[in-house]
Every structure is written in C-alpha cells, then in structure tokens.
Image (cartoon, rainbow, N blue to C red; front, side, top):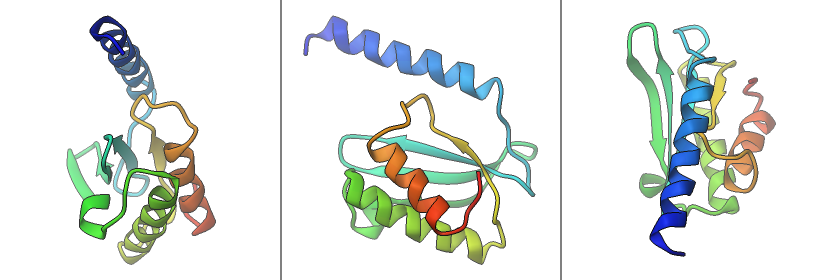
Length: 118
C-alpha cells in the first residue's frame, strides 16, 4: 500500500470520527465507550465527557489478547465485567471512525451479549 492511499484512509477515518463525535457525548450515568484499534492491540475506555474523566479502561495488551475477532470478543466480555463492577449497564458506543464490522463488531456484540446496552 503506497503512502498516498494510506494517508487518504487515515484522513477518511478521521473525518468519520469528527462527524460521529459531533453527535454523541457521554455523561456519568450514560458514559461513552471509545474503542481504539491498532494492528496489535485494542484499547477501550468509558468516558464521562461532562467532567472529561475516564471511568473505566482496559486494553488487550494487559489482558493478553490480540487485535482479532476472538481477542475482541474476549476483551468485550472482560470490559463488560468491569462496567458491571462500576454499576454501568448502558453506554453510548463510539466506534472512533472505524467501520462497524470485523473486530469492532465482535467487541460490540460481546458487550451486548453480556447485557450492556447501547
């Protein structure tokens, strides 16, 4: 993949990210769950945008999972458990400009399967 194509892919994701973030926001009772995907790891965090604080965070490096569908599903289960421990049962899902398929969809489906609504 040449540099010009890579720059346009990243620019398109950032445009989608800005468009999404203009519409969604989180609060203490309904936090925003932001997902970041790299080639090796996934990072997720529940954010209260009103006070600009991170309520709960987890990454696949600390849990020993990879950035694939199986790792995303396992991370989703672990993150759902930490959300339940923090007494959070409903969130706003921020896919961070990524398309909702593959790893991001596996993470979202794991949250829904563990009774976290979004």
